[in-house]
Image (tube, rainbow, N blue to C red; front, side):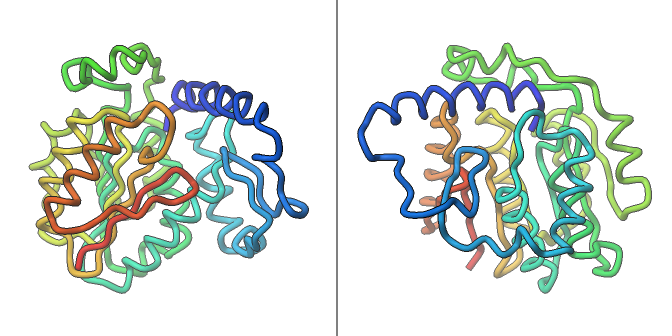
Length: 254
């Protein structure tokens, strides 16, 4: 997620919070918040916040500068948990939509990626969205106006000591460059619909039984077109997306 997108989402969250704040009692918590970040507040236990391994992993992800003004610890934990689940399975890790690599850097530490024997494939333009792959509906809400910083060299430096293959260019053009036939963990976060659908269609047949896909944008304001596309794809497989209160969606391969 780019700093531009973080600002975009922050404004969207602020607007929603302003509207909800006018509805008496709707935002009341029944005790002190255990977590209150990134559009999610809860009184329920969040023990991962005190886990030294997760703290180290998050610090490494945060240091990439991927998340702009936001703290996204619960979203990052979901990715780390999904990777921990997937490391027990056959298959490699794939992330489509990397930006500066915050999530992948965190989960690489969390699962000790070199010890798993798995490879991490990172696909992105590393310079923002490609106009021809943004839908008219997405352009109408300003998705095509987001500004991204060139970050390819920074990502290369971040992952230089890890078993990662960095693939530069737009999805779906670069999909054939991923030379693995088995995928255990798939992350999709490209902020526009056609590349995400193309990635799902390409990789889902390669996802091993029990494998997991995490969609970062699934429930976030302004990303409804992506959510509908993910739901339609899942339904076509006889499955349903799991929506998380973090705004993410998950799908497991039977």
